[in-house]
Each structure stands twice: as C-alpha cells, then as structure tokens.
Image: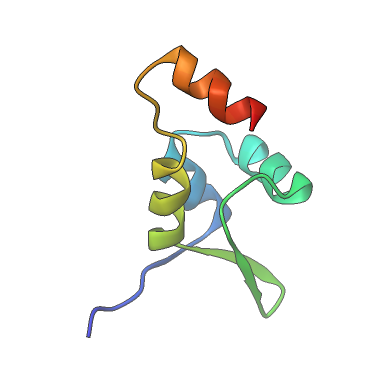
Length: 70
C-alpha cells in the first residue's frame, strides 16, 4: 500500500508552478484541482494535483481551442 502525500496550498502551488493566490482563485471558482478541508485547513493530495495537470496537457493550440469549445 502506498502512502498518500498531502500538501498545503503553498506546497501544492509550488508543485504545479503556480502562485498560491492563483491556486486559491481556482479553488474559489471551482476550476482547480480537488481539495479537502481537514480541521479547517485546506489540503491537496499529490495524485489529484498530478491528475489536474495531466488534464491540461495539449499537443497544439488547436487541440486546446477544441477542448475549450466543448
């Protein structure tokens, strides 16, 4: 059984190459990676961050535009 890694918002933002405020905006608007609250603290699972990033991989701008229109 593998151990799940939990990250703070600051650690998660660094992991994704984003600022903490950008990640917070994604959390507020519902466009960011999955998160949960534990004792009032926001936490992210590393697997969820990686999945969210993978969903945003594109081979071309055309592919990006087509997905945005869908």
